[in-house]
Length: 137
Ligand code: HEM
Image (cartoon, rainbow, N blue to C red; front, top):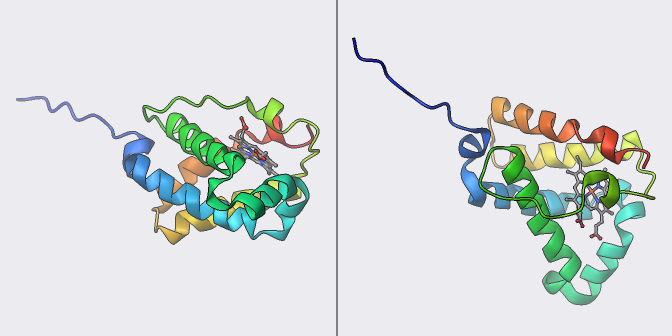
């Protein structure tokens, strides 16, 4: 009898690769920008985007960092080159309420693209695991 060697697709592949992840990140950023809970911490970024629009270097860097971070964390070829999560959020004193509000924006972005529950929960679990490095730093 022949043995079938079928590789289990990575979360990255099941999400649809870099194009699908980029679309989710763009939707996520739009939701975060419109979320009143995010105003406190994201004001400097929002101000720069107000001045420079889509050419804002902060916005461009954050978008790329998020694509790389989600790509790498889900098993894709990307390499996250941003700050570690503690350093990136140091001094912000991010609360659990703010963290959960942002996670809700990611969840909404995944729903917008009809990402199935299995993949959605896997990604939210990966992101949720970063909470101790982000809240209260
Ligand atoms: C799991 C959840 C989160 C992830 C994966 C995440 C990821 C990131 C990444 C990759 C950066 C860029 C780091 C760099 O510049 O090298 C960043 C910056 C930042 N994060 Fe988060 N973050 C999360 C949660 C939060 C929350 C809950 C808040 C606020 C309520 C927040 C506020 C910020 C702000 C204000 C910046 C700086 C943006 C700028 O460049 O102006 N983050 N985050």
